[in-house]
Image 1 (cartoon, one colour):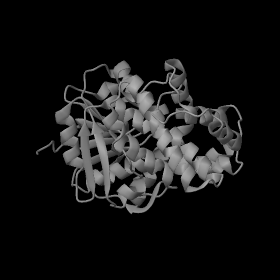
Image 2 (image 1 turned 90 degrees about the vertical axis):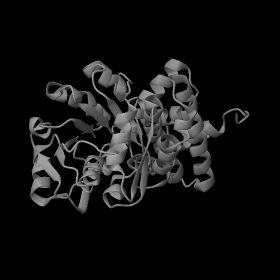
Image 3 (image 1 turned 45 degrees about the horizontal axis):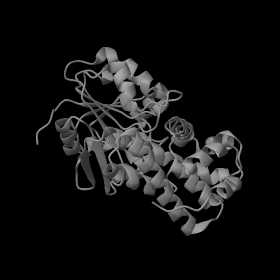
Image 4 (image 1 turned 90 degrees about the horizontal axis):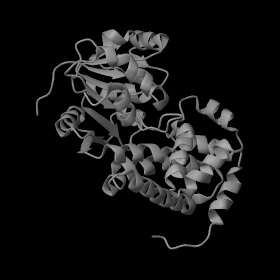
Length: 335
């Protein structure tokens, strides 16, 4: 498959944005990397390394560092947005004047907007309309492992099949495999709900409850994700795939997950503020839990794990009491 030789703009120079830029650059694709923090971008340009988020991993020569958004978007068709959900609308608004008839949007942002509880594709529709092809990159992946060249498989979801296939081809190499699907909402749900469940998994392990508890929590968490997805229009096979179950297992079981580490700290008696400070990076699951809970309440979806996580994060419920609440629920059939 052939694809454009124009650069790809990667907006967001955190760990994941940098890792994806490295992945593309290793395919000899020119990348314009931009981030909102100019001092951070100057350090990237000086050291050719993201010492803050991905230390000791060199930036390939095909990555150009840009301090100005306009320059990063010059002579570009494809734009990859990799910013936290709270900054997503702001970035869309900022790029709008630079878009043209050949512009296409790829985003790797997970979560829901606060306080609207809107998914990223809904924000795109509000800010940009339906004038540009869009696709979402999601699935089980830690930035450090992708940047280090460890085997990874992800999903690219888009109603624009040709766009998804072209992006998959650009990302594919001997250690990175990209699958495609057309289920945008299901892929977004998988990448969103798993963050809330990962906090619960961290709490469970932090309390010393062992492998049995963690296995049960992941399985029942998947059931909650499936119920949530069914109501909101997701395909069950999406949530049973990389973007759902795959991302859930990864985020719940490995300490590279900031959400899981956040839960571990809460179980150790840290306050929410102390745990956030200790992590030192965005903990997407904190805000996401409130928004998932909001949607679940609005649609009357039973999500007891998410509900108890919400109580811990926002209503000062102790982690051990939250576990007691889950275990004391009435008996019921599994299905």
